[in-house]
Amino acid sequence: MIRLGIIGAGAVAHFHAESAGRISNVQLAAVCDLQRDAADRVASPRGARIYTDYLAMFREAGLDAVIINTPHALHLEMVLAAAEHGVHVLVEKPMATTVADCDHMIQACRDAGVALVIGQIQHFLPEKLAAEDVLAGGELGRVLMIRDYRTTDYRPGTRPDWFFSEAMAGGGALMNIGGHCLDRSIWFGGAPVESLNASTLKRFGVPVETDGAISLTLRNGVHVSVVVVSDAAQRMDEVLIVCERGTISCSPHHGTLVRANGTTRTVWEPLPEDIQEGFFLQLQDFIKVLDGGTPKVSVDHARHIVEVVLASYAAARTGETVVPDGMNAELTLSEVP
Image 1: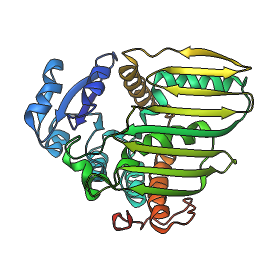
Image 2: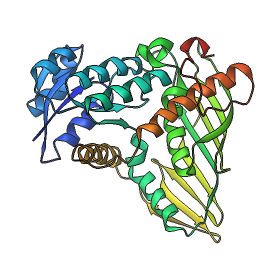
Image 3: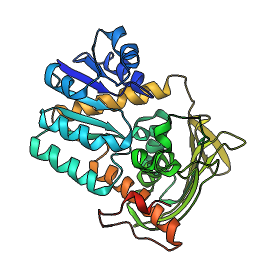
């Protein structure tokens, strides 16, 4: 039996907890949050112990693995502590707020002999898996271009305060929401980023960017456009994949549509349980890694997403084209526009 802990009882913690309850060899053993009431809401229905100190949880709960679901800048210290206690780690995206922190986490887990997996949920959502299957089938030919557009809300009071702290969140809408867009677009595009240009906006009087646009060229020549807009007139979350012989439109709102030869067909209809199913498949993947398997999403890919977001901030600040590959790890929050 794998004894699993969760650090951070907000946001998506209940998806993780529900997923653990569906896997026969996983027991949710402990939940930690600074707010005891929040931890209790996730832990009590499943008989898990409650902690407000994650180090005490590591010492006392006998964990085999932990899910870290906390503000981004805290990921490093918590991953290092888990590695020190021999606990395998699934950490929510973004992996960290600097490339140096990503590298530190990777090395610490490697040295400790524990697994490190990053929760890039896009790779497990049913509508995205349907798009992956269509691309793998080859009927549409090569991917040529991708447009990714997602709305969000970065007005004051619309999310916890830490999202508006550069030091804690690592940035604003591009680090948080744009990270999802970059993740899935680079995945579907089939190659890392070669170069990019970007622009950001700071609206509503908040200290982080509320909107952003990134134009990327992947190493295989695929062009990707990512746009994130706060408080838009219409809620949108679509990745449009343009291929040689057709297109794929993928969204949690309308499902996955394929257009080819003048006709459109639906290959995935959205279901209310799609998000929960994605978290379940992600946890299954993590457990497979603990049994010696290979994760669906590599830490190198997750690290690259952080690298690309930071490169986007540099491009927005300078107005120049930036090559993110091999960017030095010293790029810091002071360089975020």
